[in-house]
Image 1 (cartoon, rainbow, N blue to C red):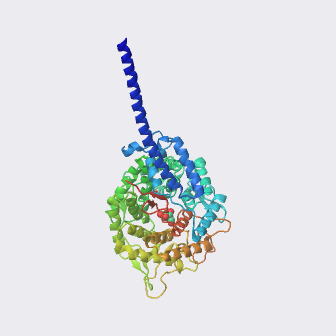
Image 2: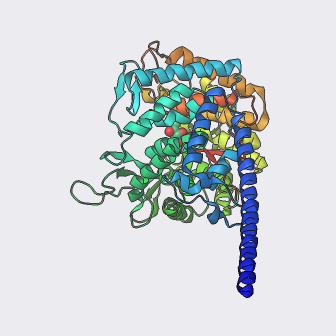
Image 3: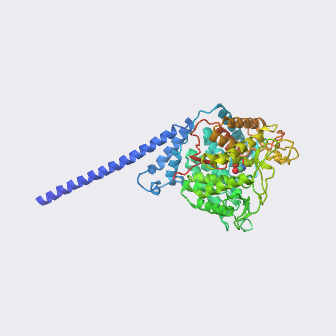
Length: 568
Ligand code: DMJ
């Protein structure tokens, strides 16, 4: 009996001790979790404090939703990266909370204090957006003069999605929220049977959804981005892995006759998919997008042998076509994405920077010409033998000095600095020399004794149009970030005023013009890139806040959508 009583009390004592240990362990664990939570909270607050009031409201709501849906968002230390990813998740976005966290830590530093120039640019954004909302809501693009929408269309609300991150960035929260509702309730990717350009859909729509996701941290945008990327993926189903340029969102590469519609495409089309496809893989944890675009990129790098490239490639053979060389239409953003993929990778993937640096050296030796009488530097076109450039350059090529400036910021090829500065000057002069102050689509340079630097008479009439393109103001933005030289702002302001004077439509929106010599005849089209790029770059050019889209933390795709640089 006594023995039994003693045993009983030892059991009770043991049970008490065990409970104590369990309680102690639980308490210690909770403390770790609570401390981690507190740390997270502090980070959230630091970020939230930098936002304007509407953005604060919106982000707080979303963080609240996140913490309700995903209490396991707490990052527990001393585990491998994979194990820190939240467990059960309602959406792909939630599967990679670590990436969400790191993008938040990159600092969404968006202050409300706009400079007076920025206020004017925000007013222009509102005016442009108003035409889209009144006359073309949910359509791809607006015709501001006839006050209707532009057809044919991809059925993807292209302008709306292309503009989301600009609306967020400049603080137009009500407009952003309204557009978000359209994406949530009306964007139908699953049921879309349209044939779309892989390139345009990628840079404007996929890029737009990803940019909106990274700034707002709203999982809706990542979910839609993943859905869209899945519907674009069949384009890569070719013998070489280089994609076909047109894809049906529902039926992939199959044509109505049951054939697979594989066609040649430009190197720019094949080489301007990677920032977006790599980003969507990183953000969602689904590597299939990155695998496809890396295979495509490896073919391009192999074919180009890390040097200047012609501008066409065949996805059936994976071989380049012998066309001429330039940095304009058909090739432009291929070079841009060499540099930007290296930056996106946290400067770890050296194959990109190797190809980039040797390309810019070749371009400087083979494609640069000078006009007479003012000796303006330009990048022309060379024939297949790479002989002296022709005396014309398209407006698209004006992204090039901005790209060089970004390379310079990253310590690349300091010897290219004068060329970057000279080309920026040339692109600005293409604006300042016309009666309207708007640059034409194609610049023809005089290379003979006598006459002006820019030839305007006797050229094809389409060369004189202006479709609200961004490349020159894009380069002004990068040059300003590099040098802080106020003349870039002065030039940007003059260009902005010319857009205001000659392309603004009183009833809402802005329209391209048929001729920069006489701007009365309007094209009746507002390209989605006018808000997403041209006005965004102008807004950023006048930002005095050093934390807005810091270029060592963010990389902008070719449509100016911001993606975080990977922190490895
Ligand atoms: C934009 O869609 C992108 O900048 C693209 O890289 C080139 N064309 C337009 C703007 O001109």
